[in-house]
Image 1 (cartoon, each protein chain N blue to C red):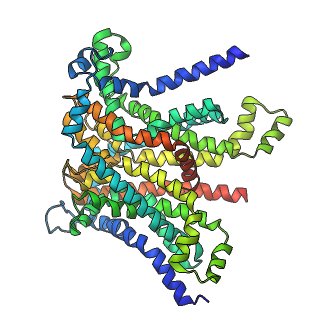
Image 2: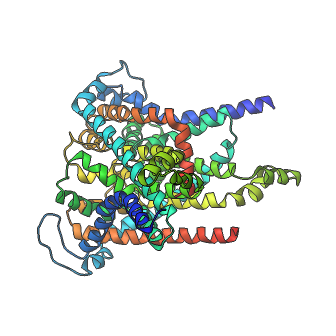
Image 3: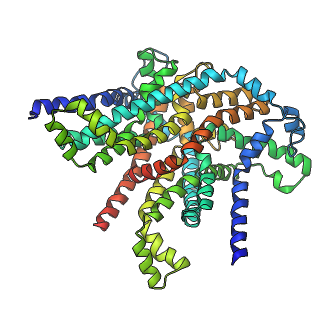
Length: 292
Length: 273
């Protein structure tokens, strides 16, 4: 009844509205980004010239840019390990469905719905202005810590604030993972005498490995892209010590207006993200094969 | 055993209070004068300065900004639902090399960081004369962040048996008509997930408005936070904190009403995404 012409028309009809917007606002800009990366366009001049690989070569000599990579990697590594450990612990404690746990879960999840820029300046107030005020008043050593202006501390400050925001998010993923475990497996383990830590180590943990893999990669990729939080929490400071790759690229584009150079940086950053995503997909593929 | 349980509950209560205390500190300080904030950081306000909120309300053009944001979110989310569900459905039901290739192409946008398309997006909007128009955000949001919804719909349609559609086709129902009357209602669980996840995402997105909108009167709630910050930090902390609180209230209400759905959506999104 439905001839193939009709089918083709249908396919077209259903796919085209999204594809138009996807092409206009993702595909075309992405291709343009590649194009700009090989030019010296400053964002305003109508003409620009091709500089071939100059922008990319410059990236590797740009100390500030290299530092932003170092900061971002170190931050992401520490954050990813810490947030997943904490959220896994929370999930194990709060996995059972009762009123207390549901309440606690919604408390720990709450910061996730707030705007990161708002969270950034709220914490800047607490760890900066308020902290200094309290030190003046009390003279206590604990308020002497310069959370935001000490090069040796600021990275950990960002990690802490970000954990405060996201621990509840990963907790939810892990709770879903644990609740997804078939109850009969658990019961069988209890019959065999498993309980407490043993139960967790040998039954729960191996079975939620897929959830952990996705939780880890989710936080890793998100933390590599860290941006709005830093705009108000540290503004990349002190100096440009806590400047992330994203913040560095944004500033290169919209503060110094070197669009061509910023595009080259963005492409290098994309390559890094794609490599990590590739590793993630490889992991999942392996997991699926094992399952089969 | 009973006291142990109570001690544990008490411990959790303490942890929850500690966890939420930063927000309480912010609310308390938003009700002080700037003098008080600097000189009496640890005290409660002498007199509650509701005036901070009144001043923020008037000086920051909050009603317009709020309305802007709501309209942008409602239309964008509706747009994502309509376009992403349609393409997700047809890609799932069509088994050709083209549908497979299109899905992979669409998923690409979930991996590429925003910085890569940030500069060209500005150029594209200039070409179309959409720069500085708040409503230009709508098609851009649909295009650049609809991929996750496509993936969710695509996965869900796979699990729906074809019989219902086939019998409807027998009755002469086809094309868009069949889709909206028969298929779309079946997708409701995904539509709910997509709605809550995208409302949160669009409400809090700061990056796109940051590069597109330059006039502070014509902006979104999220971006307005950054603008207040740049204007007020270090000089008027009391106003800045009040602005932070007032702009967080709508999304917190949304969270309180929808928290079950939001958490279910996060679980769903993490499994698929």
